Image (cartoon, rainbow, N blue to C red):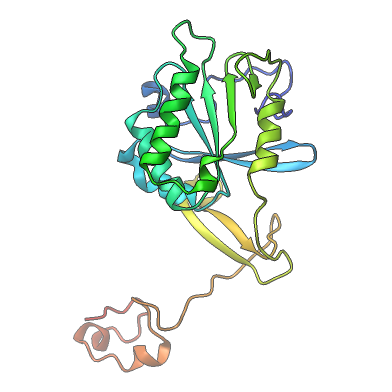
Length: 250
């Protein structure tokens, strides 16, 4: 998807599993930390979040699902749905996200695409999917060759059917771009050059590169008190360190 959308030059050398940038991920061949990227297709920006598939990293999965408007469920054409497929799909269905099913590796000699499709339908029903969630589109892909098709019998030459399915079935984000800025931070990171980083989704308003914003907290939020409340704190530590801002609350 990155290459065919023009994210890389035609002669650029790209590492395998480019989204798995963590050394442990590359060593074990799995995704541990959720990561995001974006591609442009027909002047539309498509934000992509790569999530872990195992329940051991459930926190990463749930945080990532709050940042998206739909999901692409990737299933091996030979192995079919795995235990981790069930976990991630259950969380996506609970969030009411529309799915797009991708049956990958259809070039394998032991591929059984139709049987896998039936297994996925059974999994959706077992997870009490809503009727509209059962009408998901199905694409058959060969990721190594970079091809996708809506029919297992139809020859494919590129990933255009996949891009078209995303634009057709995944709804655009809701919100008011002219409203007050409202974002939800899903994860924190750190850079030696930039310092602390907040990975977030903008729900309302507009955020521009280089723009400074302020974080607004509720005065009586749990664990925080207003200055007036601080002055009336009578615990020993606050009385002894009344000139300090990091008061302790008993």
